[in-house]
Image (cartoon, rainbow, N blue to C red; front, side):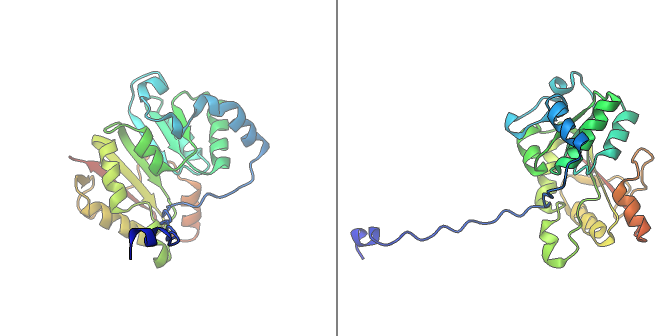
Length: 239
């Protein structure tokens, strides 16, 4: 077949690979207070993905340990931690707008200056907005366990994710996870044990006791009411 004949053929349709996400963006109803908080306070406490790389010292107006929490839900536990630890800077990442609105409202009511928030995909925020070796602690509390086997690929704790995360942690920085779903706890332990450049703070194969400073979240209470256990895992960046 000649080039001229080939050019007359219809173009082959492009096949786009669907991006696998670890979350489903729920369209929840926002309360009037959450609406007001998003309108009035996001400009003060909110950060946007398209602003690009941030310098935490500029954002918070000081140098302090940076704690990043992925998927803070309604934000109550993060607000409690920020209020209890004013010497640390807290950065929350959540796609659920009602939760962001509630957090903004509570941060404003309590007059906290050490909290900032993204309403966006955490994978993109980590890649585009946070410099390498900038995070002291990365918190991932009670993420969706995606219990069905066919959905396991959606779990955020995967080898590729933890490898990319490692560069964002400072040397000695800690990736702190918690779940009330035992199969997911075992999955996290397997992935993290195999990951290069991490060390289990408690020792190989050991789960961590819940630290006093980690508040009991709504998801934890719900899990405990259903008879679930709770597993904390803490892994330190070593290289």
